[in-house]
Image (cartoon, rainbow, N blue to C red):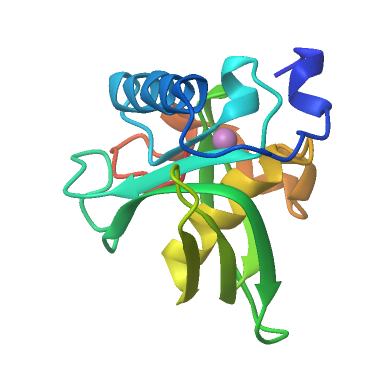
Length: 170
Ligand code: NI
């Protein structure tokens, strides 16, 4: 947080199934798994393209989290499906050591493309919807602290959760 590349609007990917795009995604996947994150956006590794990856499959950091399929999502478009808002804890690999209580749309449709240009169209809710909104915010230069309404619920992981168990998006 503070690197100006994290505040910028990322650019649309114009060509799919190219070596440089596959290399970017491989780099992102390695970074995400190395840091045990639930997701990552290209601007977090300094690349200003509209590419996010996410997925939660038996991650010991999120023992209670519902599973989210491993996904590469390019040029995403998000559409909330109701006015319902849900608040939950989030963290971010670009804001290490902290957690915040963040409002998100509860019901969400998202569309986009995978790495070879096949369309993706999903309707999701809850934690899955939260992960997608968090990652796609990175493409518009938004970090989760910018969405916090109650700053009494923003702080260091060790202070907020002295006994562990902080399920959170990264
Ligand atoms: Ni993040």
